[in-house]
Length: 170
Image (cartoon, rainbow, N blue to C red; front, side, top):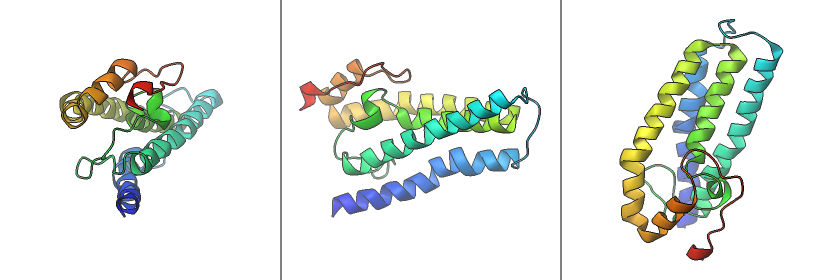
């Protein structure tokens, strides 16, 4: 039963939070209008599409893990019962945040828009502050030594080259 609630809660979270931050707001800011404020070369546009295409499955995969592995959602109001260390979290502790910024940067390049670059910077700074001052202390209180071992092994923002195997947590 908790698993189904986690799936539905994660789906709702996905639509409301990253769907708004990485989907609706960039489209609203850009007005879906192409500009040439950034170099309007095909290479930049292709890079933008690649950033969006890379970010989306990471985001969805991480959210899925919160539901099935963590038995909760990424939302602070319905947190996970278990520390999520599988999937993209084996490479970096904050894959959802990185995916959202990747998707917004991708749209900035695709649409050639400086305003979306600034929006991505604002998102990245906001996420970093949220992680540092709310999320990390909360996870430390909730999961204690388990989170400490994970935090020591997996970087927050720059992914590892190889996936971390949580042998000490098994």
